[in-house]
Image (cartoon, rainbow, N blue to C red; front, side):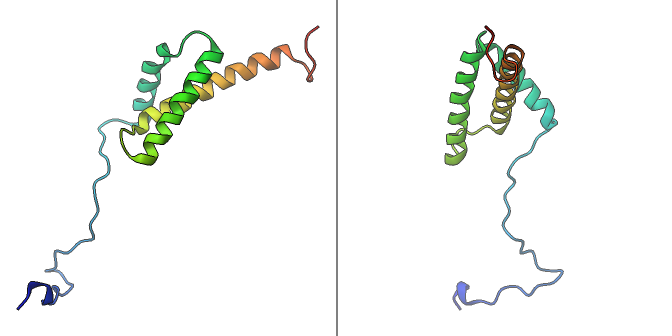
Length: 108
């Protein structure tokens, strides 16, 4: 009899059939520790100027999003670290803008 024509094993304690599930990731460290280390490693490469750092971070985040869509070379820890650095850079630029611009009026 053709193998494809055979009846599958009856469900029960002797059945070894399981739904196919892949192991997607395994880590031996905590997520926050990994992201904090990656953030610290990326910070020196951003440059001293806040404007340059923001533009660089936007460019790097676009590249990470492209990698996430394609699945090739995507690193979730790097993506999270870049997002965290961008949030820090934007918070600094907003704080500087708020200090020098009261109620929408420029210093003069």
